[in-house]
Image 1 (cartoon, one colour):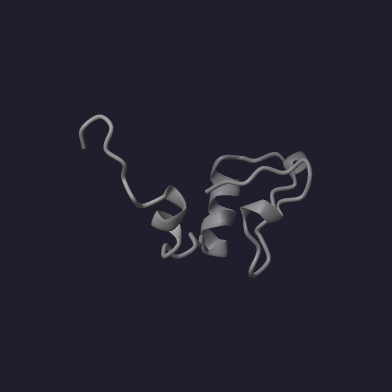
Image 2 (tube, helix red, strand yellow):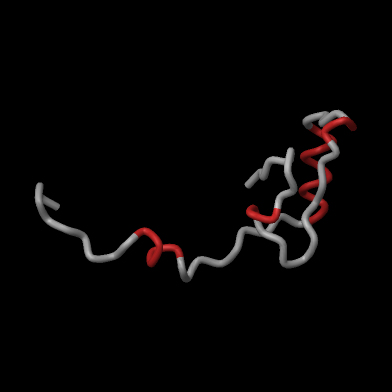
Length: 63
């Protein structure tokens, strides 16, 4: 693409058809265990249907 050309697809449109990333519970538990997450971190596997934006205050989302 040369300077000044406009790409018609917006970034929002490019991601609309992507499936959600899903880690099996076993993978999550393995990450917590193998990386030795401290209990004080209170690592939580999301409930069915939750997304990264559903993370409670003071939590981060890993993906």
